[in-house]
Image 1 (cartoon, rainbow over the protein chains, first blue to last red):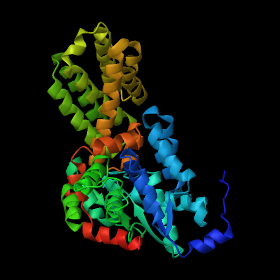
Image 2 (spheres, rainbow over the protein chains, first blue to last red):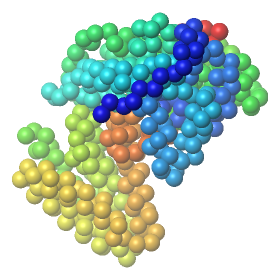
Image 3 (cartoon, chains in turn cyan, brown):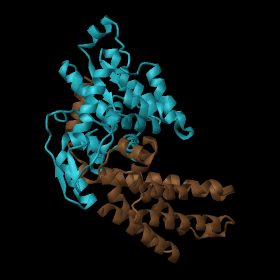
Image 4 (cartoon, rainbow over the protein chains, first blue to last red):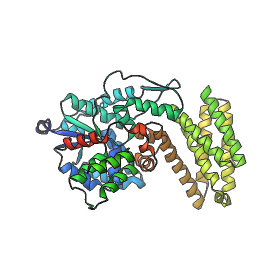
Length: 243
Length: 186
């Protein structure tokens, strides 16, 4: 059955065409939540001229599934409160049809999961929530809405920015020859990706971080890494030199 | 064909390692299962990866053997591995799955703290194997789903490993990314 379409009010679409969008993957929200940095996340939204959007599939991974597990109920509730306060919003609010996102998500999933072949088998590298971020980004591109994706996990970023690196990684780790099918279309190219590390750097630079002191940036960046943000030690040190 | 032979070999070598109480051999067998689990992503190879790693952790702890339920657990493990070997020889995937699941389900028959410890071993084993699969290049969400854990658990564990420092993961220079975010917030 086709899910019901939710249309936002015309006025919000009109306002929105001039705005920008940051699409958040579950991995980035999790990094902020597990580090207790959602207040800083809220402040970033306050200074941003646009929308922070998550897809329904990401909502499921970051909120709906973990909220049922006692160990992660609190973090999930905290992220849910961002939705309740409209810090985070769903694509419907910018006039994006859920069915369109789902359709393109499936297309992207099929493409991504048939790119790398090892031992004669397609290696499924990404899942629906991750693919839905790409899908939404592509739909927004088509509508001429400026957008970037906030993704902390490594595979999606590699797939988009350097798929050859992903092939090399799979090859070296799996000890088997990996055939890389060149992208049939350009769905995964020209994606703009940031991570929680860049967002927290910006929060620090704009004086939005509650903690003050000489070591705060160092602590923040390493905290992001320790909760799953795929940033290397060298990259952290480079960011610190930029402050 | 080749795959089922590999599963059979792992099971047979696991049985030998268990009888010799050879924890190092169990760990090595567990590592071998991760490569196959990453490519095939099927329930048997994933269950095998988690079970063999859990066994290495259970047998590593000599103090566990003092618990009254130890003999019961040991017998179930050996019986289930034997059953798995027969099922693998017969290429009976359903029975193989049942026998592998039986090891995990045997925890419910344990009691007190011992039950809690063994439960925790299996939970941590799933997270540890998930982290290894993520390290191999499978995405965080995909891996979490394969292992039946949350992305929170995987992010927390994987963040403490050296995965983010692997050179392949560096795709765009950090200055460009900072510039991108600064411009986007302007």
